[in-house]
Image (cartoon, rainbow, N blue to C red):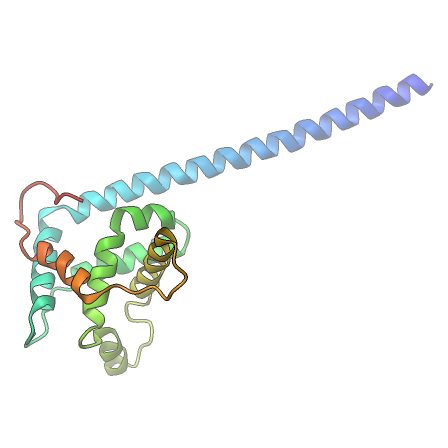
Length: 185
């Protein structure tokens, strides 16, 4: 009788080990699939970012943001809308935030910095529309990228992009051709 109890216990423990192992493997496989999906989506978004239409929008916005006297506000905010979408997909967990930072971080922080200075257009639009959520995901993404920058630099000081650095990135953006190879990173 005692050997039956040991056999039953061994089968029970073996079954539980198998169930837990299967669940752990399924979880690992799900995480890998999520990362692959995130990478695939990110590559598609980068393709869009380098497309002729977006290159034109980037050049137009960068040129306008670099002006000392900006004059009348431009109408094409496709770049901001793109970063808003990127922020939303990242914030909701569809995209891996570290991958997004590596792929778009320099652009996100540069555009964000010059949209906020010397005139803070986000606050201006939010006040005018009485809508605190205008470009909220773009802003969240920029802050996340700045946080990663701070971590990569090994500093605990507040994340910040120097206006000179932001202008340097947008200066190269202002010279984009509509067609051509993507700029070197």
